[in-house]
Length: 191
Image 1 (tube, rainbow, N blue to C red):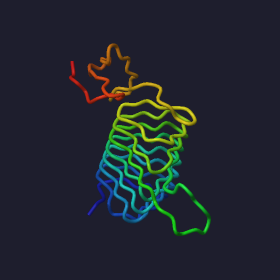
Image 2 (image 1 turned 30 degrees about the vertical axis):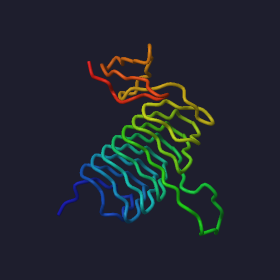
Image 3 (image 1 turned 120 degrees about the horizontal axis):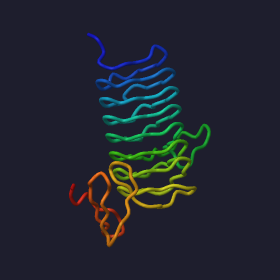
Image 4 (image 1 turned 90 degrees about the vertical axis):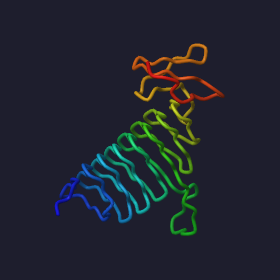
């Protein structure tokens, strides 16, 4: 039976959990018991450790390592050389450590060279700017950047920055948002 996904001849894929139409490029190593969804693109020089779960339509650009405890939902974009961790207090040769789960929710974008400290949740459609260091969880539709990353605004599902007027924002794409209890609420309506 023919595989329904592409693996470059110079990639090493040990798992059988690869979804259809996924592409895995050269010098990438995916360990056993990793789940990768449909229509993903995993760039060159990536490493994905046992225990990682990746949803559908995820783009993982070159030079990214994903460690046990990381969960990536659907439609996530990880920019080149983004860094994710799974141990807050790493030590060489110390094997009694606690893996902290990091959850990257649906639609999130992480810019190139951003660092995400473990144990956090990045909310749906949140946006992390390039080079940022994220030390706290990020709410849905929130734009963060800097070192440490701070809230700099809010974004639409389409990625455009939202401008609120009296707690309502209308994006050029036609989606409307409401600002409630210090965070962006679900889409109110689509125009």
